[in-house]
Length: 291
Image (cartoon, rainbow, N blue to C red):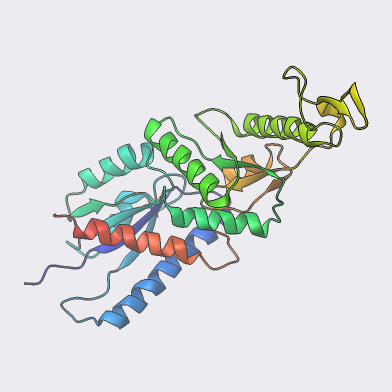
């Protein structure tokens, strides 16, 4: 008897935001369309149908993980794909325990969505859409976690964004880790102001390492002090490494930045193809593991 095709069970964090819920449903729908296209391309039979698709949540919303798995046909195997950007507590504890407790079917837990260079591409696109300028300071807003593995994932994404964008990028956490996003925004602004003071007319260098003290043009030996407070403050732009609108997105917008880019998913726009591809790749990778 042929082996049954496992369902793709996408599990999001969950949110009380109607916009966030719509955005995540949009990703689910886009994944469903991609599965249908792949089935049409590869051909399906009664013995090898296209995978069924479900959406559940690890927190806040229903159905939760057990209820989502219970909605599948009797004995239908499943691949759980976390719609989570980092592999923290929810992946290593909540989802691992839920998968381990499932006795009605065979279930395999796939990997989180990030870190991934394709997510960097979406971040850069969102920054471009927000009107980023060459002299803007950039801070990557991340949800944060008490799990060091998730923090490391966020630092990895910060480095990837800096490399891909050719900019200095710092990171700010919205919970559980430091620096907090408000502190990171303030630090980025202070650093950018100091750097601009050094580059201001009449301030090409520094005397004895003091920023903003330089020769007055045409009067060698005469010193002018260019204080950071005299320099127009540059903008601080937040790159929004959140999956969808919701509580953390609201916190990011209250952190003091001049511009906050949109999150990866939007309720009124198609899900980025990059995210759809990552979900399918995580499903395929987990499907290929021995079960």
